[in-house]
Length: 213
Ligand code: SAH
Image 1 (spheres, rainbow, N blue to C red):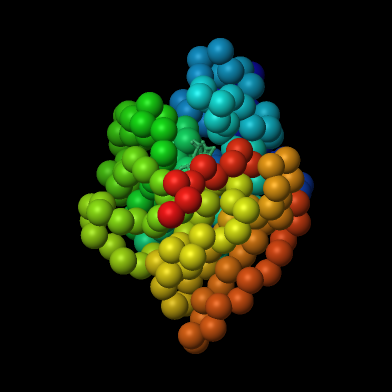
Image 2: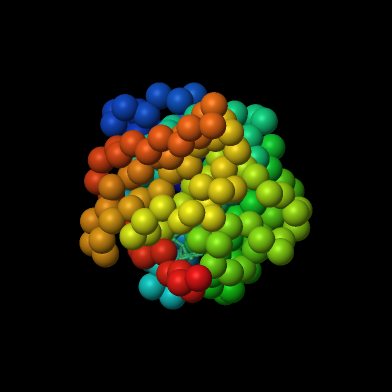
């Protein structure tokens, strides 16, 4: 089956799990996931599962990405910070919806590969940094201090304070929080000077590797 037909099937699968946000569904229709997986996994690109991308990391499960993006309530005016660029697939989905994405990856080879893929697909609203994303967007271009939406694609033992500090008011942060094998999806919302956290079901991500500062 052609990739474009497989993509349509994946989108119906996401809809069957309750994904409704039309911006999110359009982004999944626009971004070719097969470009973000290693050649040996291309035939599996539209299975609703994570796949290896090298260096013990994975491209996230499409449904999990869709759930997180729905929680972010993305719109065209958002400036998004993403921690864990990985393959760049989720970066592409976000960059399809919003005006700018700043993305941080700690493993240089993955960041460089993602950049090449995203450039080849014509994205020009993404900024990249290599380093520990739990420290936030620091010493990076553009010199943004705040983001309206923040998404972390790796599992943390707690919500990094520096990320909450870089969330604008109003703003939404989503992050998997918990132990090594199982986490809960946590949503942190800032509004009218208040910060409120809520928990939204189980998930499994590779660990967020921090420098412990
Ligand atoms: N959304 C990505 C997910 C990649 S897996 C995709 O679908 O391809 C999570 C990524 O987070 C890995 O590439 C891992 O190297 C990266 N990562 C782990 N800890 C990090 C940290 N502290 N800062 C930045 N990236 C980190």
